[in-house]
Image: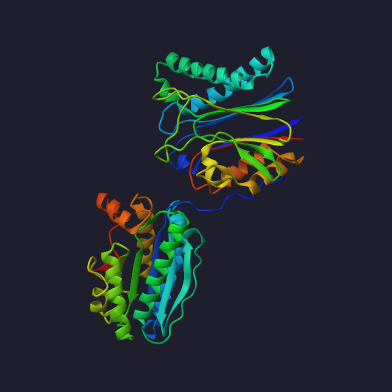
Length: 241
Length: 233
């Protein structure tokens, strides 16, 4: 059985500028599977927090439905399909509101925790880590662009980004973690190659497993963290209970 | 209520602005001047922590010259800076203090490069109420400071305290910036300005991975320093 805790908090620079939290996260358990999603709305786009909220909601709903209909035998194909559908949903929302889809730009990471496999799809600079005590792996980090602040978004602008999808056997995986890039300095050991900072994931896993673990405590940790980015921060952890 | 306080990566990847404060603590500073200097520095230690960027980007060292030249506070990030009470004693070995500062700055820049950190042009502040008592050492050290300055390796700020400060001495340290005289004992004003200036510098993009790189980025943008209300040119 998986146990999930998660939270999104507004970054200090967003607070100072009077901006809302543009991150979003969602998760659910159904039919023996767990579904997790996080998204980071583009800071420069006016409707991005709505785009991020819609993206995680639709990613969870569509992934859970697809698994319910067809099972999770080919999770990579399933996730590729779902990411395309989420993109269409966001574009449709923009169209309904008479806006440019780029105004709803956000990154997206969505994970399917199936009995046999763990599959994660990512668009943009989200962080996806999985593993067990002492051994963690960052899945398909975004290749570095020329500029530090450059990333890809679900809806552009520019050419539509392909999702980066990775599938791992579920055996030997005790924890799956999705985060937005606001946490990169604190939870990665080496930004150049995106290796996980092992002590953090060990502590997170131990905490998430403890009976007293709560979303509220995670929120307090995120809100109090001097993250060096000022960005919104989202963290969702699924651990085997 | 169970708290979550995991170990996180505490490395600071921000570009750094190294700032060396050379403070005259010779016996002529005894009494009101050193009290005001200490008070000003205490305020600075608080103010620097209030700026989200400067607290991580500014690294400050305090070198005193009173009797001997010594490092009172080694390079410390603004957020970790703790004030200390500086006592007064002896003569004014400014030459030795300058040598110490240049050695520390060179080492600090080397450390930045080795850690893959970018940096701004370092700042060197010299505050004195008299004249150096280590003449030959001072002459050689002053030439060394001007040389580093010419190579864009440091920005030099000379500040005279009181009417006995030898401004010629301070002039000899820089070909680029004219020294100023502190208004009375307005150390608090100076340190408040320093904090604001480090904030302004930290918010700028005038950093690079080498001294020559800094020269290039500085050519494109000047760091806008706040007006000096605490001194007279």
